[in-house]
Image (cartoon, rainbow, N blue to C red; front, side):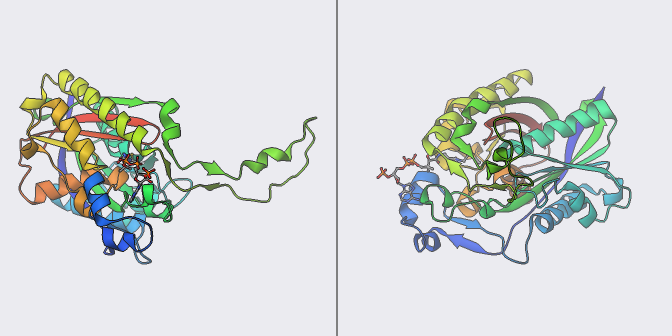
Length: 337
Ligand code: ACO
């Protein structure tokens, strides 16, 4: 049967950095409150010259370069994002920005902070079952456009970024995507969302079925991010260790036999709690959220890219990774670099 492995990674960040002190000028907060509760000190935010597409294309180009894969040799581009620049998806625009002349399939995966892990799952399925050879998985989000910058409970958490990996078909003996565990809970979705508003279109039809007001006068829009932080915290600390244990079990591994724990970078206290539950020692935790905050679907490939390029993660290392967030969705992947 067919194996698949990660052969390159890359990342990209906007240049504008916003510190906790910068935020304390616009909302009632402090560097101390934010860093003690979350571990976050800085985050990057897009400005006029950056976009989801430019960041994604930059991260993807670096990953392709590391992999030694030409854009024309891609047969699939998976764009994991919840902040597309088009209602119909952004993946084809990234494919265009990369200059692919061979028209590889490109589509979006919408699953918030779990998006990248679900992208890895999809890449593996396409390679194992569909005969695909070179799959680009991009995790990118620009949540700064959906944050309520007057809500101190949420605006301190998020940053913008893009990360990417190339997943390639290989012999089964070289397989580097060992196992997955993936879940959703729509019931819990009320704790974290940015739902559609202007549902007044419903009023266009009267009780007797007659049309009262057509066409609708407004375009639908999404509201800012709404979050019950305590509930999301509890959900993460409860569900993520179970999910990783399940994925580790399928691969015949335990928390003490992995080289690295690389969680979605939401909150240092969540990362530490999950590590403790899995008995992963602190020196095996990958964390960079102090510099970038929660970058949603980008956080795992961004942290992976930094850890690979700094020499921390070496060829042959086993990594347990997990994403969790809005939906609610959560999932784990056990990978070998
Ligand atoms: N600065 C100062 N005070 C604040 C701030 C702030 N930025 N934000 C909230 N407070 C206040 C609150 O108003 C509250 O005051 P009160 O006691 O007078 O009512 C107090 O601090 C405590 O607020 P809580 O919300 O209860 O604080 P908590 O300890 O739960 O920490 C936090 C909040 C950091 C958001 C935490 O709940 C958390 O990290 N949850 C997980 C959130 C998360 O990771 N979300 C993203 C995952 S999914 C995804 O990535 C899309």
